[in-house]
Image (cartoon, rainbow, N blue to C red; front, top):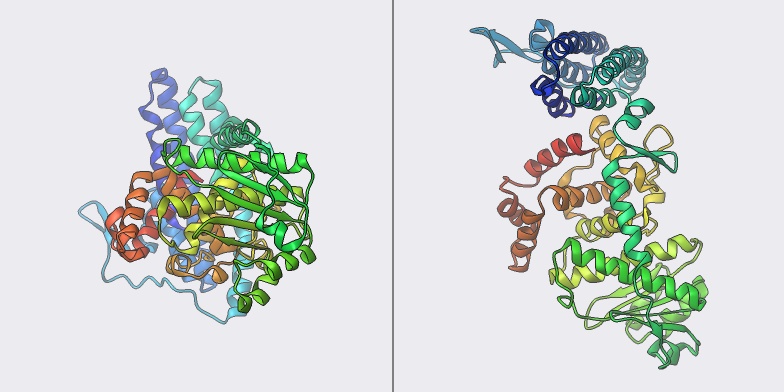
Length: 479
């Protein structure tokens, strides 16, 4: 069940349809039909609240009543169920209200009640969707473009996979997922950055890795990267383009002029675990007492005194290798730009933000996505970034949204699939909605301000939890 905040922004936009300027008679008739549809939707939520209450799902009942009251403020049953009273013609929170807000019963009872409630929810939402679909189609036919658009958006609150609504709003189907128009555009632009990037020149000088291992690596050098590996020349060329394209995208997003981040990154790409172990055992950058640990990892990266990454393909395919190339490139650029040792959520969230835009992938497993699995319906998976917006919404809606302090303070090993997905979304929130504040946040970190205090100063909030509320509100507007 969705929390009440999911609806508030959409209700406001939906109600604002009447401010457009179509023919007066058509607009007036649409407004009447819209009001009636919204009132019917509110009644469905009240009905769900009654059932939830009967099964001791008091928290769910409260949320459903709050949502119904947002839809139809005149619905007295919803207002009372939301703990309010009528005072001078206005519904206000009632301090004396005895409305329960915590589910009761044993875990098995609650699970059974939630399953039963879901069976009630499905036909209720089908009725609401059918109502709104007819309303949107009639608005479109009547030339009420803005009203049709807002109605389709409102409908998606009840059926996220509604094909007519998605198509009407400009979504495209990619990998059997609906991708919003803004994401279609950004991914197309990202792909062009890599396709058009320079691929460097052949590099003949023997590298430290070649001297230590005895390997003969394929090597190419560009203005910003030395890319080497046990691969063909055409493959190394592609990896150089991935790295240079990712760097160009980073400079653009972070408003850095060309030359502003002037340093070289050396990459070594190997194919097998055995080759990786050979690298680890012979690399003079790895302390002997750390070699056992690194032998069990998927690569080696360091930022000081020089920028260096070793990547092992292992069981991954070629798309995985390219993804790691972009992922690690962003790690290097962000580390150099920020100048501080940032937390895992920010490092990983930022890298995923870029691989999504540039490659439409999130293959790199600094976070154990595969260990914690999916969690979304409709075939959605944490492994596919096309699903992440829907999964983030679902996490908030079904109560599996990880606490923000655990995400923002957690070590890399603590970031599972849900926490990693939230980290990506927090970065998306900051880079999309509040980029200047994000830059100010990094400035505070550069000045040795602790992370939560930096959040307070930059975003004007009391701390992590208030930032979490801002993020949740944005999710339901943007996703």
